[in-house]
Amino acid sequence: MKYDYLIVGSGLYGSVFAYEANKRGKKCLVIDKRPHIGGNIYCEEIEGINVHKYGAHIFHTSNKKVWEYINQFAEFNNYINSPVAVYKDELYNLPFNMNTFSKMWNIRTPQEAKEKIAAQVAETGITEPKNLEEQGLSLVGKDVFEKLVKGYTEKQWGRDCKDLPAFIIKRLPVRFTYDNNYFNDRFQGIPMGGYTKIIEKMLDGIEVMTNTDYFEFIKENEGIADKILFTGMIDEYFGYKLGALQYRSVRFETEVLDTDNYQGNAVVNYTEREVPFTRIIEHKHFEFGKQEKTVISREYSSEWTVGMEPYYPVNNEQNNALFEEYKKLAEQEENVIFGGRLGNYKYYDMDKVIEAALETVEKVL
Image (cartoon, rainbow, N blue to C red; front, side, top):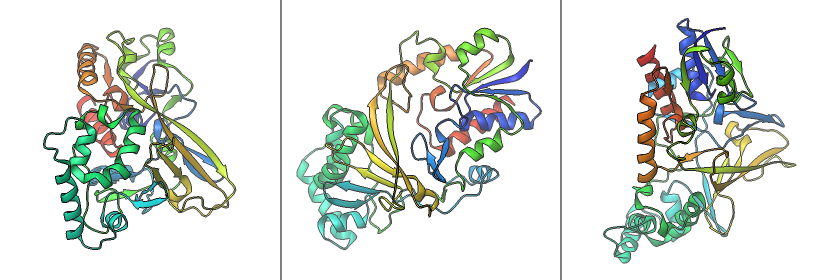
């Protein structure tokens, strides 16, 4: 069987491309090495709850076109992301806003909060931050940085803040309003029934093979398609011949609890360095669940090595330079298109993945 497109990876990027190609009469085969479709937005149903298997995914965008596009495949609820941070025995609202400052300093007005932050920033005397610690202190002062940024960031990157480059936090969003909505985007929500259903609709009528490793598959099926859309790791495609790009990985500990409500919020961050996990997700709250039990996932950030699940690209100068070298090799592959988070070595929000996939569709179809 000969195909127009072999699409490697059934995540959001590959699935949008497959859906659009199929709509235009192209014959597509989608393969995925995992036992399921959906990539990192895959949801697994446990106790009637849609569990975000690879970390919390909250859809948010200011692009009306993208919002209307994704709404073809699902109805979205009105979930608003309002995380809570735990530091020792203190509880704070995120992102940093007047609720945070009021709790931290027992103040009420935006003016008091601005003065408090300005005084703490001035105290640091930092004018040219040389590392992430100095950058954070020069943006929000000692209290906010030490309680809500430092420990969490060190766990996420597995490095001391003094050993991380300043550019990682170019800015820290500070709001002088009593608003706990994490995102500023106009459109936000969670698809009712989970994300997997979206991918199922996109891939409806398209041939899909799971548990299928591209490198093994292509050895036996060379020339199976005119073109390949590759959404895996660009360095792996080239056999890591210039060296491996670096990622951070995440490990999840998921458990079912015999209670209807464990933490009262979908996302709770643990900002102390001493607590080994970065956050706990309680999945039912994404869809306002009323189930008798609940499912939680603790997230542990970890170093990545070849063979592990890659999550966050480490976009420092050294890795970006290496990616540019791989990109040159990619440009010489006439019949291969590289896309998505791993193909472009870039952290994408979901709306940006859809935008990028639709741009590729415009270009090649």
